[in-house]
Amino acid sequence: MNGQTYEAVIGIECHVELRTETKMFCGCRNVFGAEPNTNVCPVCLGMPGALPVPNRVALEHTIRAGLAFAAEIPAYSKFDRKNYFYPDMPKDYQISQYDMPITSGGVVEYVLDDGTRKSCRLTRIHLEEDTGKSTHGGSSDGRIAGSAFSLVDFNRAGVPLMECVSEPDIRSAAEAVAFLEALKRTFVALGVSDVKMEEGSLRCDANVSIRPAGATEYGTKTEIKNMNSFRSVFRAIESEIARQEAILRDGGRIVQETRGWDEVTGTTHSMRSKEEAHDYRYFPDPDLTPIELTPAEIDRMRPRAEDLPQHMLAVLVAENVPVKRAHQIVDDAGLAAFYRSVAAKTKAPAATANFLLADPARLANESGTPVHEGLSERAAVELIQLVAAGTIGSKTLKAVLERVWGTGESPAEIVEREGLAQVSDRGAVEAYVRDVLAAQGKSVADYRAGKTNVLQFLKGQVMKTSGGKADPVLVEELLKESLSATP
Image (cartoon, rainbow, N blue to C red; front, top):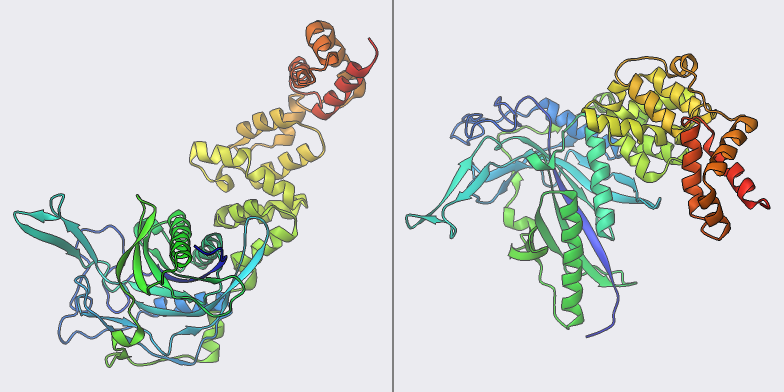
């Protein structure tokens, strides 16, 4: 076994079902969860003589997605037939795009949790139709009355599917997940897809190879399928890298193939040899005319930079909002808009982010009401300003927040009317401290004997005595002064 270290080389193929009213080439409804085989017609079932007509909204969604990542949109593109047999493909071919896709190139920028900035080039984003869905049934060995069977639902057949193909620029499982998350939040922001992995509207495959560290040539790649969550993507890539490293260290050879991911065993398994482009016998679809676009049409579909999540993420990180919190905000469109409005008034981006993702987020989870609906902009601004000014502490903050949640009341008015302002007067806090120290002789003796952990107990007693209104920072300061003084 050799001691060679290896570098992973990863490319991602991401399939995204588009949010449209109808399918890609016919008028059947594009909805999830309908009764099997109810949203079908001669076109999506591939009946002889039925002619496809492209869905304009799907075309526009794909172009906008490409423009969001600075891809090139050619003036001329076309649809092709990708020929292969699978039981849930009604036509025995798939309408897709081969050598002249609707977008070309582009770059996806993303930030890892540790703040490292990365980018991955896109080869293309092209448009195609989805296949149907097979459900395999039977007894434990897949057979009933001596016959194996499968059920086929063609509702999904013909649904517009956008495929995003990356260059092999990704070097770890964590990077692969961050790349996919960047794609997802952009597609949500653009409104082109709901990207729900649990419903199959976002599916991805990973091409994984390894090579000796420092090498420039690519190793033999394998393609991993059947990953139904970002967690699965991470685990599958990690597992496959480890498998390939073990083979090479034992003197073996990696075979190019398609492998499935087994969530239960946490391993990949061989499915079939990897197909090449020539295996699909691509040729231009004779029933569909080429797509021609003018510069004016392309510009009309170009999204504004400030509306893109990668732009907001960069702004948040530049304003010293931690990366994890920045991702939480950007991933929730309603919260992101609310954050922008509140932060513009508080002039304190980091404090605003920290506040919204703390107690308001907890209340949102408990009540099922989003932060931007349960809390008014005025209330959020006032609460942040009251804390920043030292007017209220954390205990009062929680109490007042719960009172104004869903009511629209003014936190500042409640604090003033009910005398909830934090006590920061040194003399008043000293009085609280003296009373507690006089009543807690044993704890005082323990502290002076070296058991300094009792300080937090004493601090809690002072806060209790003051009704939670004493400035906690001043309380701790005065406790240390008093306890350090000669008895």
